[in-house]
Length: 130
Image 1: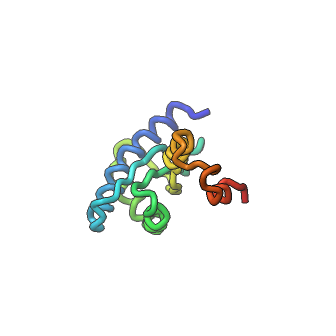
Image 2: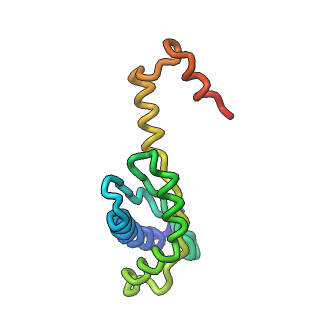
């Protein structure tokens, strides 16, 4: 279970990371992309922060995640400048795509019957476990 300290640090990081990532996307000419930080988990020793991102449109997720991961040191530096009065040491950042919204969207489509495997048997291949 997360301590209050972990939660506070995660909250601080989340707020500033949203600003940094959205600013970088706009600065890079990607005005039609929305990057939100859905969750930040900080390890007990406060050395690593797992950052979960929701990227819209979904198709750009993998490409953007790679760009963000390769710029992690720059992002950490920018973050350190912003939180230097609140944190002595900024944790290492690891980024993940949070696909829970996409997952929920797929469930809703299935429930509404938009993807009916009886009418379109080709959909069954997608549902099989690898």
